[in-house]
Length: 196
Image (tube, rainbow, N blue to C red):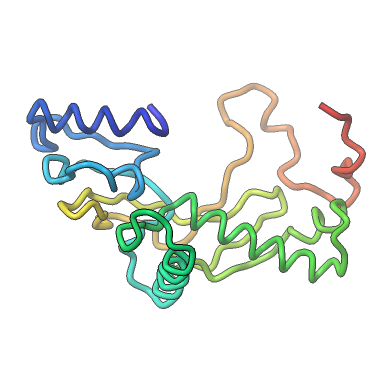
């Protein structure tokens, strides 16, 4: 399941009185936003795997949440104070800041120049980790397991000590081990790719 299909699934778990002690669920696409509109008390103890949770306590996340709350208030969004941050928002926030840094490094907005300048970008993220863009254009990120709390937030019960380097090619597909692990300055420029 993914996206909005998660909400009815979790509602039905609650309606059937199935708790994490009976049928534990580990989700890979359920976060604070999906849980915001439902009663999470029956879901306490179920798990989710993400790279970021709103409940993380660190200075970068405190700033991120305050900035979001200010934006929500300024724009008078429905739900106001009940609005939450989540992993996709944090990922977008990080990506936009890295892109800005790459534009500044390239001294250009030219796609091909920024493409190359993205490699090696680092950013202190709300996850509490400094994230790095690898030479293969995959981001080093932490992995976290969060347990659903009655208030719809997550208590992080496990996390990696450091960020994890992405493995861009599957070790289970023959020939993938021969594919290059990095994007080079001599690779096909993005601007010269055929149109879809």
